[in-house]
Length: 132
Image (cartoon, rainbow, N blue to C red):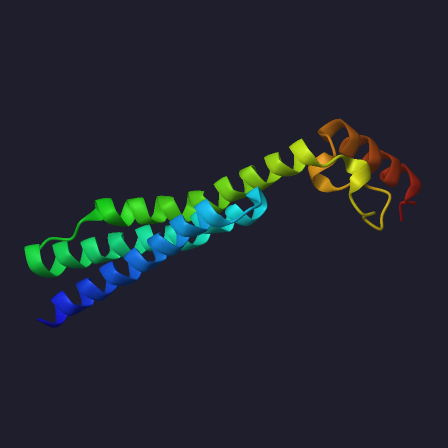
C-alpha cells in the first residue's frame, strides 16, 4: 500500500514537471528562455517517471530493472550538454563578437576563440613570461 502511494506521488510529480516544461517550451518568447524548459523541468519529469518505474519493478514485480537506471543516467548527463549546444548555436547565430561586452583580458570570449588563435595567444604569453 505504501509503495503504491510512493509510486503514485512520483508519477504525479513527474507529470507536473513535464506539463510545466512543455508549457514553457511553447509559451516562452526567446530561444534562450525556451532552453530552460526542456533541460530542467522536462528532464525532472521524465526522471520522476523513470524512478517510479524502477520502484514498481523492484517492489511489485520483484526484480530490479537496470534499464530505467541507465536511461535516467543518460538523460541527466545528456540534457545539460544538449542545452549548452543549443545556447552556443543561438549565440553564434545572433551575436557577433563585437556585440558582446569586453572580457577584461586580451583574450576574446571562449566561444569565439579558435584553437589556432588560442595557441597563438598562449605562445605569446609563454614567450613574454620570464623563466626562473
